[in-house]
Length: 265
Image (cartoon, helix red, strand yellow):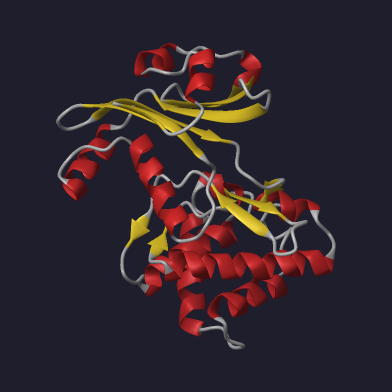
């Protein structure tokens, strides 16, 4: 199955209009962004359409999906959804909540009765000049940092109030345009998303811990972290129970290699 939402002629030009074309796509060495041990890869592609405008597209392929993901999807939905379709549908849910995601271009999947065998997702580049992770490291203007921190806290609160939560709510998965009058944010890589009428305290703490653990201590002060939670909760006093849950979750995350930069100098 292939779904194309926009830029069909551009995809045909790039040779990415069918499932088999995408599977066989090689790409130039300088277009490869990441290769996850041959299981998944990501390409950044630049192309000029018939309208004369150059666009940057990101192609994410699941080349060797894990069987457990297919089984989990089957158990949850009664049918197998690929990771690409999950991210596509999750992005639509996030947009429906009034938040921004990288514009969806196309996705395709091949699934069996119990597992996904191949899938891909194509999006436009995220809006925003840099990731929140990059902003935290580079910006040293107190007033601008405070404005961005406050705006991000309100956006995360809106995300949660919409009944949405994600264990992948990392600073590198949120792009920001700090120059805007009201800093604008754009979410990427939301393949894992929980949705319900309300969120549990544990889900909120899990998400906030993910943000916290991907904001290194060298880049974010304790005072800034406390203020973030004050704005997020819209209260002068931060809920001690929430802080305790976040702290416990952060300690758990810091055992993993991918969070080792949290306390780095």
